Image (cartoon, rainbow, N blue to C red; front, side, top):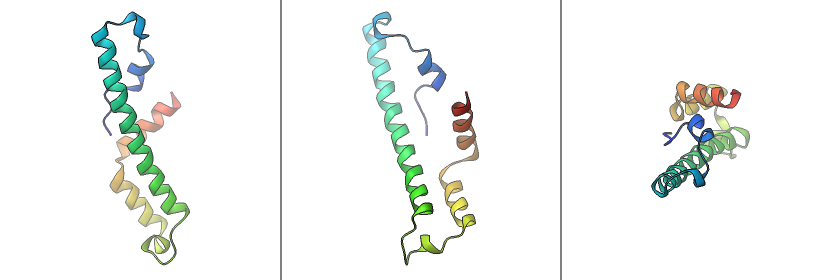
Length: 91
């Protein structure tokens, strides 16, 4: 997932009154992009969690071990992505 701005940049974002019209337009573009990126990442994580918590009967998901699910998560998210997100939540 690649955001247009970091969380710190969004925290420091000035109100629209203090920005030029071009800066406001650019901020809205960045916000739209980042919201869509975050939504996609959240949906991906929700799908994985749903398969872990509620595997469908008679499917491969029902027979998967914890290690298999860990491999699926590793194929979806890098360690750096998971660590980055956890540090931002802590801060």
